[in-house]
Image (cartoon, rainbow, N blue to C red; front, top):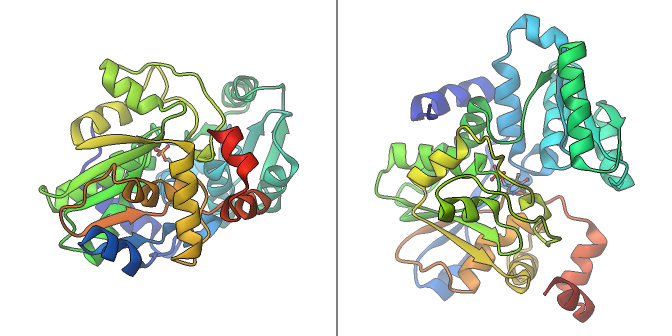
Length: 328
Ligand SMILES: *Cc1c(COP(=O)(O)O)cnc(C)c1O
């Protein structure tokens, strides 16, 4: 089963008033450099600081009243957990976010402040997932995964609809890529409206699970490594149902960036565009600056999130040499 344009248009109705329509602005410096108009879709200004609220809000809107009364659960410590906690709170629903003991206090606080019920279990993401499975089995909570779910993909796809309204002549859209919910949804929307527009995924070279899977022709596991684009870490699931097939069918290209190229994207966003973005949100700019993406016409870069530790951000924009070494 694939997520269609119709599904994405319905998602837009479902989430209207619950998420922001974020601006798309032309970057003069990147346009001058590329020789074609380059637009930045400022999705890092979305409520909760990332696009994940689109999918979470749509998935919650699709639940039956009976499911709503049971509440939702996930094992994400990042942008999905935060989005789910926010969307559930808006609907007066219970949300349980499971995480391991290794999660830093600041991330925990952000989710706790949204009123979610937090379960700290074990020392790994796998331990946290076991608690999720237990809560689904024993307490009947509804698990909403971060990407491999039709309503999540359709929600993320609403970003693609906005882009094609804001930049109707886009020749290419550049999308940060991890589990592929964003890329699959955006590509389905963009190509549904404008079949000739190219959609290009960008991941970090350190542990790019979707790229390795596309190359292998099936979902494969890769070693998870520390990266500045921490929101792009993690696998696609060996039992992937939707995003692998959609990315294989819809993406025109997938490119990989070094840690230096990601840092350059964060630095450019700050110094030239006056925008604070996290590593995952900077890969489009990094791809353009590195010339790994060839610009042949009007191009849109999705700035997907801004939830970066500010002391890390400061070190990156100041060009801390130690950081370059540890990340290289
Ligand atoms: C989750 C996330 C991504 C990647 O989205 P997928 O659907 O997993 O490919 C990119 N950027 C940010 C900021 C994210 O939080």
